[in-house]
Length: 211
Image 1 (tube, rainbow, N blue to C red):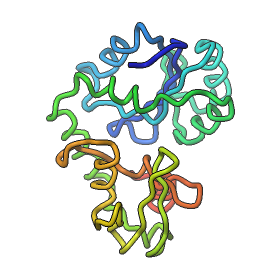
Image 2 (cartoon, rainbow, N blue to C red; image 1 turned 180 degrees about the vertical axis):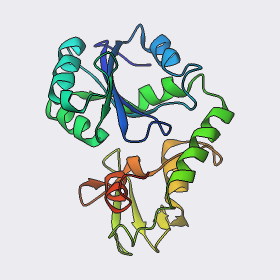
Image 3 (tube, rainbow, N blue to C red; image 1 turned 60 degrees about the vertical axis):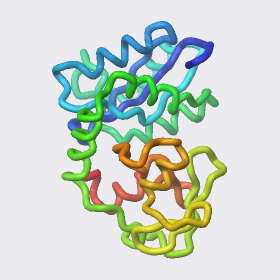
């Protein structure tokens, strides 16, 4: 469960809304209902949590973010911005906030069926080529850092890594570190970085944001 302080700011993406992020706020008491509202009949696939954090004054932080990225806002009555999620996340991290992304991801997924997850993954897969480390400028022998800041995987080929002595795909390695089942739909790139840059950002640079 998400613990106090109860005010939360989140950054969400959706594979059906390419290039857009949603910047919003909620509270610990309202977070479950809020996440259920977001995945309604008007949204074809579930949202992904790019980042979530606890803050002292969510209204002030949200207002500041909306102002800072106002030129990228799609509709003044909606919280969607045509901008890279990493830019918003970078600003939030400057505030030394408490990262609760994993907890909010669990809340988002609580009422999502396996069919919903697979539909989202199918949409992602249809829009992007499979990740190739060499194409991203990540050579064999490179060390990838997991988002916990401690776990590492070593690139052993253009599409495989070694984790804890076993060779596998990056998706499989991510599932293992997150404790997820083998058939769990997952996009691994947001969970890893190379030389301080997220693999997701590297991918988007190479493939013109088609992830």
